[in-house]
Length: 408
Image 1 (spheres, rainbow, N blue to C red):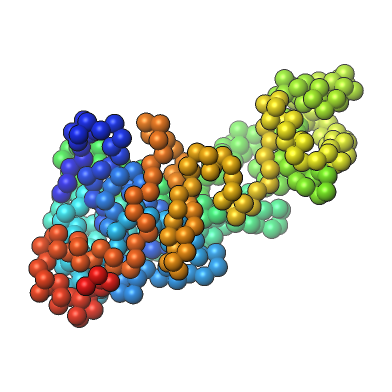
Image 2 (tube, rainbow, N blue to C red):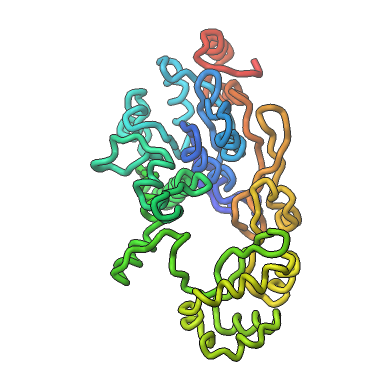
């Protein structure tokens, strides 16, 4: 298996990505597993996605799932294999032999039935790191089928997001995405451990435990106060001004004033001098207690002001604010465009769109796009040749539909 090398080992390049030289074989679909592979791929790993005959069904999802494949499958190569056939499993094993990491997100037992489970692979490849993405970590729930929505409901997140009596899932696949990120973190930790011990290990990440982690602050809020945390729409804010305001022409904007210094700046900027002198509003604690009468008055004072003017003042004064932005409007966000945070992504239908990069910088640069989301089986022939398949053997797999390649 390839070894991880430092930047000093390869041409002395300061721009070398951290996981160049690491190979990942990914058996995954939907969001959680693909997110893990995308993170490792963005950071330089050679990620090989194993797809079934006809391609990952995620490619065909309509509606809310239409963005899954192009978002989470960049910087990967595609190999199509029929893992229900022994020859397909043999080809997968040949690729795994060349790899450092296997990542999968199928139901418990599926990879074992294929002969590709951790207990089988570790005997043959003791340096292999095996990342399993599941609904639940081992325990009483592990047999259940989990979805992001399921664990948001049972993990407290939907309760905290919705109004009382109306649990509401978050507006993104937060557990799937973060579960994949934690899987990638586990793989990174296992690579470091392997450098010290010479041995690989198993990493497990899950949706349910991820959701519980996200609401841990509210669990500890109850422990600290003895009072259950109310859903976010009805929470008692820690700050007096920390809300969405409707202003001129029904525009909306989020405004926050979170310290006594900011309160003085805010009142001076909008000429609310009477509030500066009001002893009932002198401190944040007093202002929170005064929200019942103060907030209606504040909303009335701002109702006739244009949202752009409110934003201009808040920005000039260094106060926290945010426009209420829809996802499609982010394609034209001036900050994202100026910083190169959005990269051209090819969709399966031939169109070109833009996708956000990882929200981090290494050495002053964002890890970028090296490979477009692959076509179905785009790299099958190339990669099987690399692991020892001659032309006759490759042609036989393709002819019998055990493998698929658009290039042969």
